[in-house]
Length: 149
Image 1 (cartoon, rainbow, N blue to C red):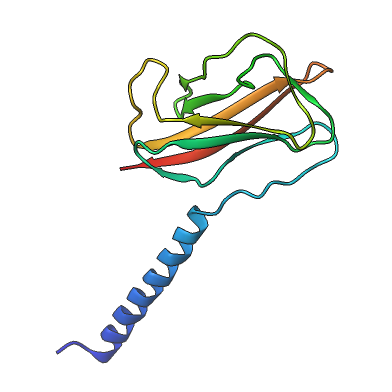
Image 2: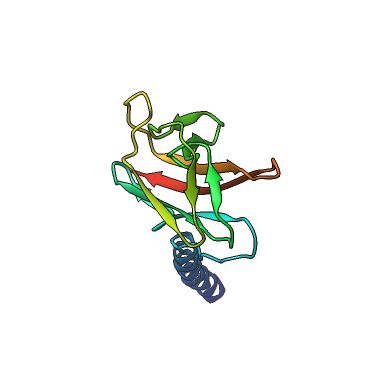
């Protein structure tokens, strides 16, 4: 015979775990909100943060500031980086100056293929972009995504 107190505690724990799991799941799938600011700024946006292996990942680079931004190449400084810091993918790009006007966006699609042609494994990756401002300061943004089996 199991004491009533143990049954109540076990039942409460199971219910709390389910509620907490639903809460964490909803938090993990939230899409970042784009906020426009005064001055130079840009944002990197994906439609979600969790992807299945092999799923195409649409990446938007948006000028979320009030001034035009100048990038040193046609890929807008985009790179996919492993959490160990190694660059896994960078789109083929021409070394031409690219400008992104305020509220303008550029879309890239990554098919989870590394630059060497092999596929990535499940894990956590950073999507990074950077540019050099007119005053010589580097402006860099990044987001982290998860790839699951």
